[in-house]
Amino acid sequence: MSGEFLRLAAFPASLDLGPLLDELERQGIAWRLRREGEWTVLYVDRMPEGALPGGAPRPPRSLRHPVTLALVALSLVGTAIPRFAFPWLHWFTFQDFALLDDGRIAFGTLRDALAAGEYWRLVTPAFLHFGIFHVAFNGLWLWEFGRRIEAVAGGTALLAMVLALAVASSLSQYLWSGPSLFGGMSGVVFGLLGYLWVHQRLCPRHEYQLPPGLVVLMVGWLLVCATGVVDLFVRGGIANAAHVGGLLAGAALGAVGGWRAAGRRRAAGDGEEGR
Image (cartoon, rainbow, N blue to C red; front, side):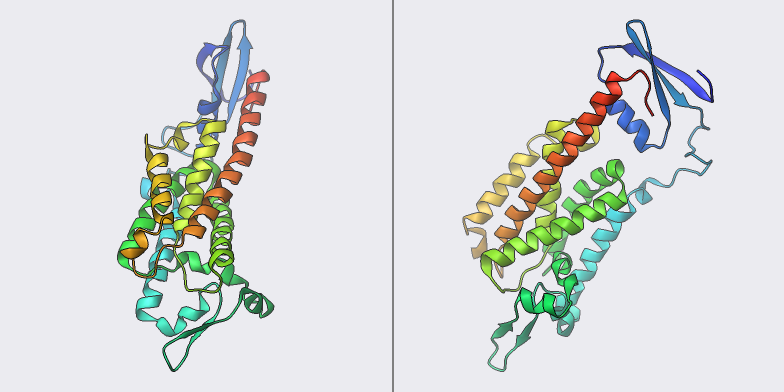
């Protein structure tokens, strides 16, 4: 085999090397496969230890998920708006609103907002949080799920997914409850959970492997919230429709991504060489 490729290991031809090849691609390491009788031989690009392609040093672990970190930081900013900049809050809600003299809230509609060109309202409610425990809960799960997806699919794909899930979850809540004041990243969090869950079922990979029982715990929490019991203890109530809408949208994205990844894995296993 020509080029600067190093023979790394030989595996039985029947062994599924998909997870290993996915990890090599995630690390930016070029690879080749060659069939030699009953064995599949793996060759990898020769690179200095600890270096990335092009000779660049590997960034610190804390900086390997910049998009996930940025999303958590924006959620923290969104927590400060209701508390310290309330007059600005109406610019970030799903639909505009105004406080009347008698203390009631007059809501606009989504149609009015879109007619005025305020398309950012489809996304910004996901970053609004109404308390430190609210943002802490969502931020921890956003980091847990988001970094897994960013490590495999990349930051651009994660950002696009979060934006799509933010729209799906907020729109679901609006269609269910009508004009109201809601916000939070929980719909996106359930969407990322749905993505990882379905993707892992269709095309298993270790980065997407969630702790045992986590899916049952999260879905169980969703069902408990849907009963209305939690609303008795949480000021403002729970945006249950956003959770369900996000979960379903994420599962749909996971199905598409899982089918595509499984197809690529089968193609890599069928060919004698890959890249």
